[in-house]
Amino acid sequence: MSTQSGYAIIAAGGKQHRVKVGQRCKLELMQGEPGESVELSNVLLKSNGEKIELGAPYIANSKVIAKIVQHGRGDKIRIFKMRRRKTYRRTQGHRQHFTEVEITQI
Image (cartoon, rainbow, N blue to C red):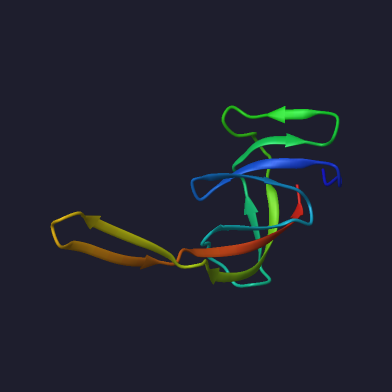
């Protein structure tokens, strides 16, 4: 079922994402090389434009196929802790790893 008006809601990396065919999205870091195809089998909801199929919690025998585009790291965020009047200051930085995928089939 790969219609252009359809979409799906998938669970990947502890988050839920609404995806359509041809869309690129950033997911948590996955194993695989750029250009490889991956199957995302945790499909929570699937729609083809008219009919909506809902899982409990996942839809059986349903999957979303995606192609890995690239791996990367997100923007740096700064964590700053301070206690007033105590001469306590801590600064820490973090960059989250991600995998960008392109949805090819629902």
